[in-house]
Image (cartoon, rainbow, N blue to C red; front, side, top):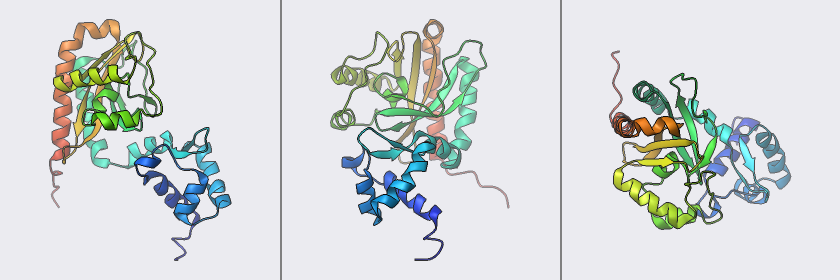
Amino acid sequence: MSEANDSAAAKIVALLEALADVDSDERSGLTVAALARALGRDKSVISRQLKPLVEVGLVERDAEGRHTLGWRLFAIAAHAGDQRLLLLAPPVMRRLTQLVRERVHFSIQRGDEAMTILSESPQRAVEAVSWVGRTTPLTCTSSGRALLFDHSEDEIRSVFADSFHVGAGRQAPADIDDMLRRLQRAKAQGLAIVEGEFDDDISGIAAPVRDVHGRIIGALNLSAPSYRMKDIKVSAARSLQNAAAHLSGLLSSPPTSRAG
């Protein structure tokens, strides 16, 4: 092994890649023992390497000692990963914000949660909370519902096999069957409208964004206090759906070549 490949940084990268490269049976995370087997290292070494990663949020550890990639790593990836998405999404989001005068987000799926990685604000005095870098349940949010559009019923039931988060709002789905019925209605409309599910006073609208292969890579959504959303819901839904389709088109088109 070369000196570069044997460096501390290379070992940390290999550890993070092992956490990212898991099959369907391991999506709940890997233990120290499983990581040691996968990487051919002593458990004590793996434990020492994980400790600082957990402390800074790059890796998360649950009560049963299973490890997954942390939210902070995803937030960093939002700035350094898919440069094309980061280049193309903000102008579309900014324009949508100007049209609807409400906060707009771009979210990705992370297990049974949606993580907001980009957000544009209209600079209003009263806004929905900015959630950049944070996660919300797929079960009771518009972004979560849009992210599930292409999942089969069996896949969705597998995602929520361990637990089903019931939202704090009075209109939240009571169980997975209730959520599946709402998901089917949203898919028929081509966008998800959620009112009073995550929170009694927050409403959201979301539509999926697709890559060149037609796969859902994220969801564009707007959120606002419910008292304001009721007056703009129809026009905002139309504007958001158009923006998501436009962004999908941009991501599916070849990059514009630059003159040399």
